[in-house]
Image (tube, rainbow, N blue to C red; front, side):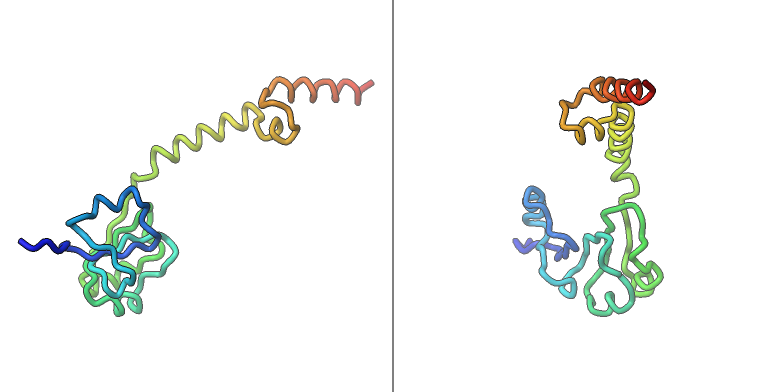
Length: 137
């Protein structure tokens, strides 16, 4: 068995350094997609017939996000290139972000931050009530 990694992978975005050790002995990161067996794709590059023609060894395009909007699946299929994605990848983080936004709105965190006061929603509410009373007087 060879010590050479079996796969050559091109990443649309730079691979975070903490993940690089996972590839040791398995894959080599290549600087150009034309050298790649596989691509870890984001959403910025259009993957179509023109792109695939320049990557003759390409076998798989793995999309890091939910959709295939920038990948012409029919062009990939015509070249026998597998296309996959991670549809459930951001599910938990999306839910967490939604809850955080709900808290931010209900606790008026933006108004607190803009006022320069400590992030105490009650101070915003009291100020608003005091202002309303002064306007009515």
